Image (cartoon, rainbow, N blue to C red; front, side, top):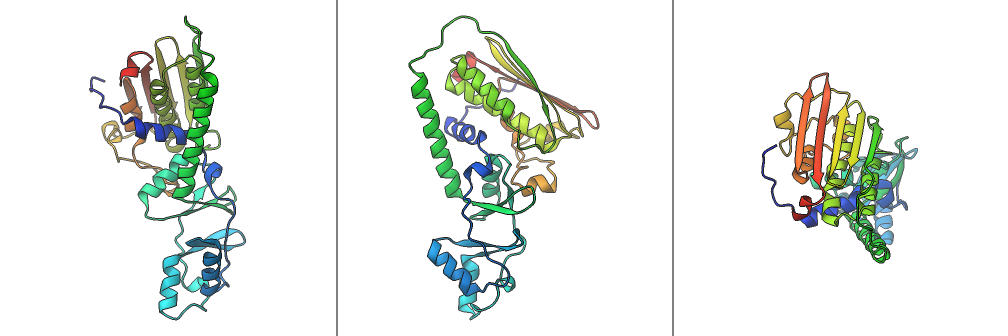
Length: 308
C-alpha cells in the first residue's frame, strides 16, 4: 500500500481503454474462405491468390480441423506436392479464439504467439470468422474516431458544478461469462463521463475496474463486483467465491499466472491483470485464502488522480 506508483504510459492506457468495450466478434472478418480436407494445395493457392489472403482454415462440418499458410503452399510447391490433399500438409494443432471473449484476449494472443491470424469459433465450436492484427488496428481507429465524435458532440454541454449523487452498484459475476463481462466497467465509465471527470482519471478507473472484473470471470468460480463513486473517489471491490490464491505476492508479479489451459488457449493468462489494476490505482488491497476466495479493493481518487 505504500508503494510509490510508477509514471503511467498514457498512450498504452489509451489503447487498452479503446479495446475494453469490444468483443472479438465486433472486430473479426466474417467473410471466410475455408476449404475441406479433400481440396488440393493447388486449390488453396488459387483461393489465396484470388482473394489476397495468406492463410486458409480447413473445416469438417464447420469445425476447424487445420489451417494452411502461405509457407505450407511454398513448401508443397518446392517439393512438387501441389496436387496433394490439404490433409497431408495442414497444421492440425490450431489455436482458435471464441467470438464472445473480449478483444483484449486476442491482443494478448497475438503478443504470445507468432501467428498472423486466428480462426474464430462460436459456442458450438463452429468457424464464424477470422481475426488478424489489421482487424484490431482498424477497430481501434474506428473506436477512437467514435469517441472523439462523442466528445465533440458533448463539448457544448458542460457539466454543472456541485455535488453529485453517490453511485453504488453491485454486480453478480459468473465464471466464464464473457458475454456480459465488462458491463460493470462500461457503466462506471459512463457514470464518470456524466460527472465531467477528466479523461485520464476515467481511463485509470475504467482499466482498474475492467482488469478486476475480467479476473473474477476468468480465474474464479464467480463472485460479486461492487462499484462506488462519490465526489472524491472511485472504489472498486471484487469478491470471488474461490478457489483462492496460494501466493498473493507471486500473483502480484507481472507474468505470474494460474490460468487454466482453456483460458490460456483464449489468449488470456499473461499474468498482467492484478499488477495492471494496481498500477493504475491510487490505493490497492488484496486478501486471499485457499478455498476462501479473494477480495480485491482498488481506489482511484478523482482529483489528485489527474496528476498521474
